[in-house]
Structures are given as structure tokens and as C-alpha cells.
Length: 235
Image (cartoon, rainbow, N blue to C red):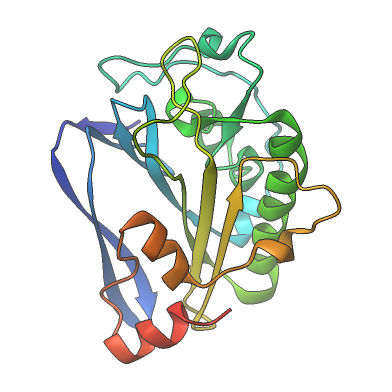
């Protein structure tokens, strides 16, 4: 079950345990519509007809769950003008997950929610099925090594982008960042929407600061300034 709201400026509170207490992370951005699904959150942009970003918490239980992939691509019921599952047909682009299906193997609800079209972005097939999948795989592997991750994923959206027939813009770049509070560590990837022949996921590791410069967003701003700068500048 989800909740939606139409907001010009949203302030999203992301609560996690840090040093035995609670820490609120506030992400400010312009969202046409803001949706809280059961297991992830969407900042949606009506102009681009896709998410500006999605946020989810990635745990060992979700990664190691037994729920099988549902493949039930469908419109998001909480959007006023939703993209349809058929809107990508004959576009030459995959319906690329932002929150990966394999991150949500906890139960049927968690898996099924990842197939809302609000969680999709046009990705070139060999990008989606190869290097983007490798980045997603790496992120799940980090959870086994470093514990729970708080993950933010999104496309870089701006004017002048190509559109598929249904009006969905085609991003040229994607990013994925994660904070691992148990290890006081961050990981960030920035990658072009192209096939990356001969490259591995690690070739696209950047600092969180670099992603902030590209997006104009301030991630994890409620951490103490010294710690935030230390973590966001590490590669």
C-alpha cells in the first residue's frame, strides 16, 4: 500500500540508526508527485514522465529472500497521468529498473512494487542487461559485507533530452549511491546510458560529491559536517 502527494518542494525524512541513535536524512528536490510505496519512495517528474530519484533500504533479508521475479509491469496507481507498461513498446529501450527487482526478494509485495512503471527509466538494452545489472549486483554484495544500505538511484534529467513515443525522456546518465551506517562508508556510481564494452562496475565508482555536483542535490546532509565531507569525498 502506498501514499502519494502532489508537491512542488518535498522534504523527505530518511530515518536510520547511527551510533545507536536515530539520524534523519533530508533530501530536498522539486517533485511533481511524491509517492511512498511500501518498500521504496519515488520523487516523480511529470515533465519527464519518470522518477527524478527513488530511495530504498537494502537489507540482508531482502537480498537473500526467496521471492521469485513477478514481471508484472504496470502503471503506478498513485500517479495522475501514469506511464503504461506498453509505452516502451518498439522504442528500442528497455524498461530499466531504478529499484532493482533482485533487491526486493523479501515477499511478493516488495517484488511486485518494483514493476510499477514509475520505477522504470528508458535504458539501452546492452546497458541495462550488462553493466547496470553488474552495478546492482555489486551493491547487493556490499550488503553481505557491510550491512544495511540506504540507496538512492536516479537518472540525470534536463531539457533537450530525446523522448520515446509516449513522451518519456531518455536519460544520458544514471547514478546510484549508498550509505552503509554500520561501516560509516558510502559508495557511488555514475555511468552513461551506453554499452560499456570491457568495463566492470568498479570502473564507474565516483565520490558522492561528484554525483551531488551533477544533480544539484545534497545527499545525507544531516550527518555531522566533518563526517559527511569525509564520507562523500571517499572513492
